[in-house]
Length: 76
Image (tube, rainbow, N blue to C red; front, top):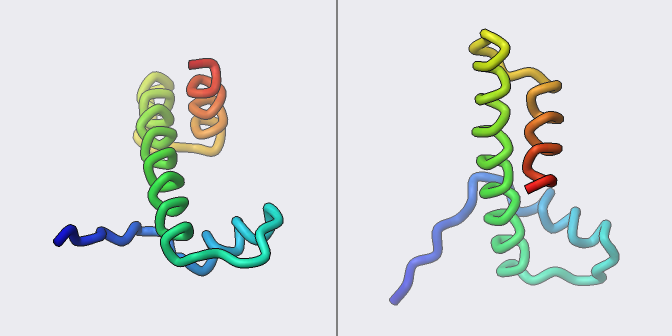
């Protein structure tokens, strides 16, 4: 039997995101799946943002690092 690992993100806000996109109902498994996707993307953005902060000589990640990281990831 495969055990499902729950994501870090709370499911209620993730399910609200899906409903905000237009869904009337959201299964728990859909919320768990999106939470996992968002968590993976958040980690990817955070790692790239850390590179930007380090390049600027900082140990603190700032909002500008996050924005640059997202732009870099979008460009592929």
